[in-house]
Each structure stands twice: as structure tokens, then as C-alpha cells.
Length: 171
Image (cartoon, rainbow, N blue to C red; front, side, top):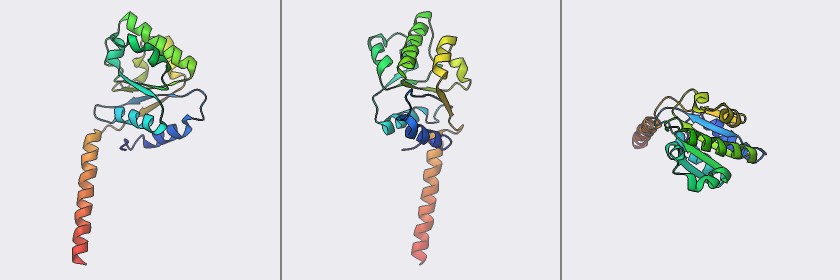
């Protein structure tokens, strides 16, 4: 599984320490488009083997998720993808606070992915920000597009294989 190199250590440590924590830590994964934030959150869930629900922030805030709010409040890990891109209304902000509040009280983990660098600005309500950030890790993905990084890695591997093959033919 591919992890952005700058945060791979954070991911592995989080997974290793997860079960030992009575109150699970939230995570904000911040970085540019294509940096591997969503795939990193999926990797965490796969490693932990926990029930999870991924919801795009735009869907969460436009009210389409009302029918599954109870799931969002109780699932082992909630992933909110692309927080900071949604249109916020007073009702959606109140709904988001209720979800964060209940997950905080239950000690459940929430992972947020975002392109926003100023993580505090993601929370327009101080109560929600305080509860979410009280036990939160912030991981910043590398500035480089992970897709480009993968292409460069694959190209290096092809070159190394070609050199190895040439050395084998020469010997």
C-alpha cells in the first residue's frame, strides 16, 4: 500500500497505538490535490480492520446524510473527505457539531482530509473546533502530487531493472 513518505511514520505509529487508547485520536490529513490524503485514510482503516464510513464533506453539509446520521455518530471510524469545500448553513453546522460532539463523548476517531492548510479555519464554530482538536493529530502530506511521485518511483525502478539486466548480460 502506497503512503506519502512524509507521513508514513505517523500512520504506522497511529495504527500501532490505536487499540491502546481509550479515547481514539482524531486525524486531519492536510495537503494539496493528488497528495494521497483519501488513500491514506483508507489505508489506516484497512490496517485497523474497523468499521468505517467515508462521507464527502459536501454531502455531509448539504443534508443528504440525515438518514445515516446515527451511523456517522457511532461508526468506529468516520472519514470526512475534503472538509473545507462544502457550503455551510446554520443547520448543517449544527448537524456537524452534533456528530463531532457525540463522537467525542464516545471516544471515537474521525479522520478528516482537506486541502486547507490552516486546520483551525476548518471549524467555523469554536465549540466544534475545541472538541475535535482536543485529541487530534495533524498530518501534512508532501507538496508533491503522489501520482507524480509514483511515476518517478516506477521510472527509477525500470531504470534499475534495465541496468541489472545489462549487468547480467555482460557477466
